[in-house]
Length: 278
Ligand code: C2E
Ligand code: CA
Ligand code: CA
Ligand code: CA
Image 1 (cartoon, rainbow, N blue to C red):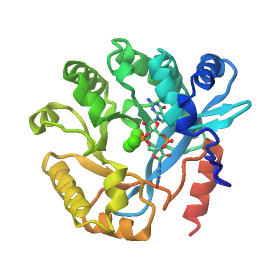
Image 2 (cartoon, helix red, strand yellow):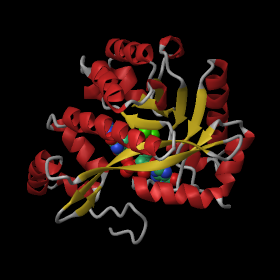
Image 3 (cartoon, rainbow, N blue to C red):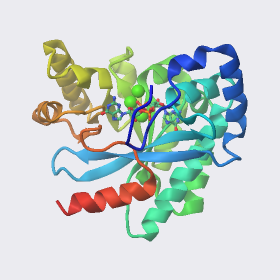
Image 4 (cartoon, rainbow, N blue to C red):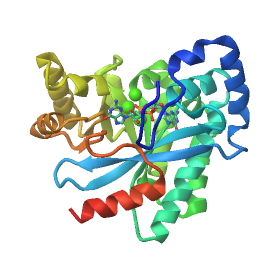
């Protein structure tokens, strides 16, 4: 399935990853992808619900395969997790995001960047030090970095989550619980984590305009987040209707194709200049 245009044409669909030999080949290629310079980060803007301004970006890993083109993260992140490559990839993401923030800072742009943290990274004892050192090396304040950890991963190993969250919060990094609503968090546990925000899972946002239940869930999550002093972000916003409902519900930040797709750093710069002129 090829999607024309946009910065994210996915030529390699998840089901192709189930073919054993194709998977083995892909896994081998993935081992060399970093050294061959095939990895990059794309950035998707997050929009402030109050003033409509860009209030941050999420960094999303992209793999441009020499033969297959863009491989979907759904395929290669899963492969990397299975074959022990995810920590190495994750470390590259940390380094690259910090380098990019420093480059932007040089051009007078200060923007909060969110990176995604995998289960293996969460259990990696050197993660906090690594992030601290990357920030220091590039002269980026910790408060400018946000780490997104999915609710399911955060619930898997509560001890590791608590330890890593505490460590990251101690150095001043912001934390977000991603895909919230898709897992089952104990509210008491949630209350103990030094997170700053909840990110509502895309599936709920998708159904907002058609489902009373989805509206009730999102409304409840926004209220819960605010009661716990957390910000709330909605991802996967694709329509003006969804945006209006989310704003009505006092959702703090919005992210999705309705505003912008994930894009390379230079395209982001051009896009935001265009937005300012509107
Ligand atoms: P995620 O963290 O939930 O990221 C949001 C995904 O939703 C991204 O998919 C993004 O491109 C997509 N998206 C954004 N707006 C819309 C929208 O309006 N509609 C729809 N249908 N989709 C939208 P992407 O880039 O394919 O990434 C998929 C997943 O791969 C991410 O889900 C995350 O779990 C994982 N991932 C991506 N980059 C990294 C990374 O650097 N490290 C780790 N550990 N995981 C990553
Ligand atoms: Ca995320
Ligand atoms: Ca998400
Ligand atoms: Ca997701």
